[in-house]
Image 1: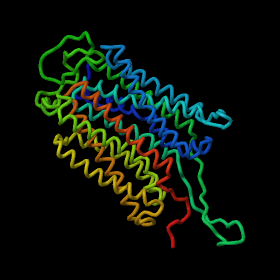
Image 2: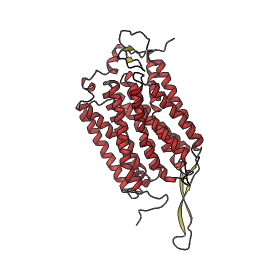
Image 3: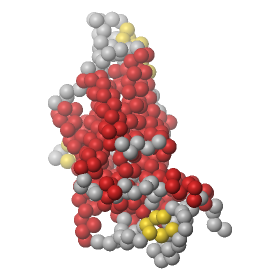
Image 4: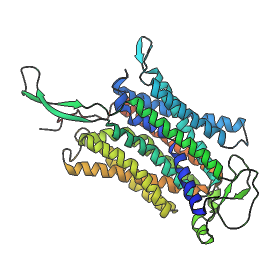
Length: 448
């Protein structure tokens, strides 16, 4: 017996969210697990610099997807999506087994397996934005917001898992000082062991990616097949996935007539003009937003938060990740379609980002360090900044949805290009010139 319309609708939103969860979960998982793996890998805390470069090089996935579109015209999105999902599952599975294997290169030990698999996963994640998003052109706009909700979960769930693992737990203890000069007692950081290993963490990450792939398969089963007969009447209409046909078919996600107008947005003629000034502004805003959220600000998060303590850093990471799904929920209820309004929100996000960059530049002695007010301000700034930019990304993508598959493909390219430029721009000051300085655990560097 067929599921009731409301149940089918809720199930499809859930599957779309789980499908979106698999887009960046692998790379996000590697980032949050760095405090654990650097203890055993020979690169030490230089590993984040290597990882930043590998994620930037992962944008070669865009070229591979473009080559696929040239060589296999009319094949749809299913094959590249399955390849991306397969690379993610296999890559994280191999990472669980091989992450701590070291091999000599030019006489020096390097974590070749970890770096190679990180590059493969970066290729898959970067390609996901230009394969997953065009597929969603077959669905009505509300499902695009569920997809971005899932993308928020791809950052939140690895963070929650890392917190459960106990990443970065330490305590400052009084120990006798060495030597004959100086005070007889000093503070020494004592690191606690994690509750489970990095191997277990990567296996759980593999299971999350497998769940995302299963959700995509379930989504295909819910959508109309290419051979189904078109029907008339009210209801959500979706294009047949996996084809380039322009025909639409009645969706199994039926809604009462009174609700259809509220779910399916009226077509915006300007949105179909991909190269209009309005669309160019939206794509440029999308690129700038992702340059900040995926490249610039993550590079300085530790410098802006750690002076206020490990608790401030973990709260900023986890609550900032929570802000992403909450912004998606807000976009489902209230969606800003005004270009001026989105520019105003972008200005607010940039002001918050400028404050965080200032804190990072003043590290290890930013304002209000050592006070509760400083902790509250830095955490609140990260949460509001992440939430604002997440809302902008969802709103712009929803506006571009009415432009069809090509517009969503352009949105995916803008996201990746912006992220690449942001990462490349921040690599020299953080990894080469050492513009930002980090503090030392249990050492007061700001005293008189």
